[in-house]
Length: 211
Length: 162
Image 1 (cartoon, rainbow over the protein chains, first blue to last red):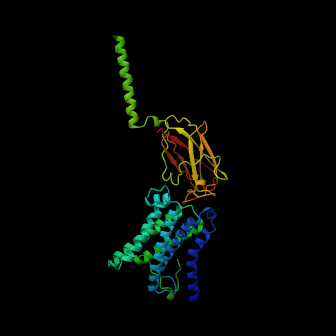
Image 2 (image 1 turned 180 degrees about the horizontal axis):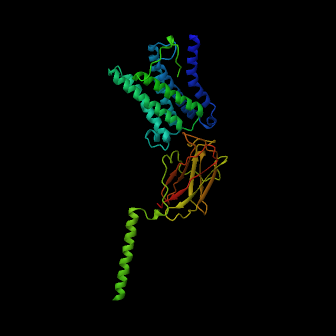
């Protein structure tokens, strides 16, 4: 029974990340895009999926992972997220330099690029803060407030960015992924701030749903 | 004597009127009160290709880009004005030379150019249009389609003499 439950949780997470990517790969717009533009788009969609994995890892709901492993994976997924965002921006820049320059300078005519650029800087800042945490001997409270605040900016910015874009993402899977990212992030922040009851570790759990 | 006075008076009146209108035009463009000049849109000039040739049609066509070109102030239609049009379409990216083409306005100041279907790029289905010929101030427009399914789009220019 525990095995079934564990498999279901992992399968749900896998689906939540993979279905939006699969749905986007069926987009009719792909036919009229160059490979580099397609890479840019999918790097963005993958980054959105990683944005779901990050809070899920810290929510303590994934079966078979110890908190230490979860934290370690969170670090690697964070690095991958930084790489995905960088790839997204660089590939878009190759596709159309003036559009990306406008976005980075906050003078783009499209409101979603503003949110995207804000989220991008927040991703870089969150990663940098994690990197400097031990080197600067940040106080736990400062670290927690800083990293979680940046997480809120990243999630809010990325969701606004994704929802306002008319692109290759299929609308239902896009909205669902965005909702899951918000729920998972809210859950972790609620736990950390003591607003919500922490779920028991899945190894001993009798209830609780995966986000 | 009287004649001279009258002349002087009319001269002063005319001069005063001239100063008044001149001052008014400095405060708020009097000419533009009739019809204000179109301002360039943000991002409108992205991927502009100076000197794109006048064409009968961009690529295979199927989508109609149209609009008008008028003079600021009196709104008089401007004939023979060159408008460049480009977009991300089913046949090419905004950067591609073959996605660009120019057309001229007719005697009613109307332009109309057939081009391939516009598809969403960089998050919005949009087109780019430019007036950049020198007689009037340069204007770049970036109209966004209400829906990606539209098969036509309009953009209107009101130009300020350079």
